[in-house]
Image: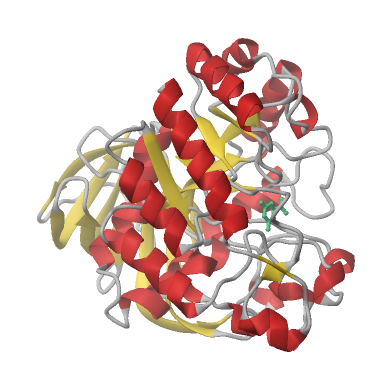
Length: 436
Ligand code: DOR
């Protein structure tokens, strides 16, 4: 990572409200960072560099297990540099890159090439998901053992999903023997024939919809196969009430985790009445009853964490009528603020559960970060909970601008992101300075 220069600065962050569900800490404390790790959490700590963080929250760094940095192939939409800058702005200290690129990440040389570029270009920790099948075509298995040796963290057919149950079963068995978790995009293409959720909003707008069963049937298949094969599985972007209930049912049977997205937790399909391509996403935005069921499932821990599915698209792919637009939303930069505004400040989700879902649980999943326990990597996120801001194109660090929150006023903003002890985002200048 360019911004982490290997110098082991000592840094003391003073008087932040430190909230770390991994250790049960929620108190105003000082945190001392040394050698890139959390060295001490206590009172009245001092060091060669100090940051006064009165009034700010300090969390373990957010980790995003689902992002599209469009590299290789669509660097006009996102690069490792811009994707990681966008992640840092959103407080993410670790990100998993999806393999639906051009070329697809289905060969060890693509994995190792990406890891080299991450080392040089990324401001945050980044991990590579390789493909489950060659070309994401659901036909030939990738060489998962070699992909793992090259450094892949997991395997996925994200973006499309695996369409045949028999093919998925084999892939799970092989991934399991290679020691790689499978990240599952659950979508049955024989049911997903529309572009939005098939409901009242679709009917009123006159846009073809896909039923919720397009997700639920594929989720049920994945859960049954995960149970039978024992494969370590992660179901991503759960957006329906029934899929959440299925995960709840299978939790005791399968080695399975799951996530949902900020947009499925905060937006509904009434937005499609504008007919704007901006609001096309996959899985589609759903009506309120699904959104509320998914929120309940996140709150009670059925769904383990939040992942953004950060999916940048160029203007010519989004500035179109809904039916012609590419599916996908930017996610990194608005995730915390949207969830804080819509769920925490409205009393629907405790702040500690949100931090567990954005930091601790995904950190455990990637095997790095997500805790401020002494000795942990010094990956931290500083938030001003009272800052109000409006999402606008000019404020985005991504190369793309396809955020569904454009124009919205949000409360709570990431003001500092620290990776391995280095400040990779510092919007704190006006609030506090570094005393060298
Ligand atoms: O809306 C989406 N966009 N969903 C996906 O699964 C893929 C993503 C993309 O790559 O654009």
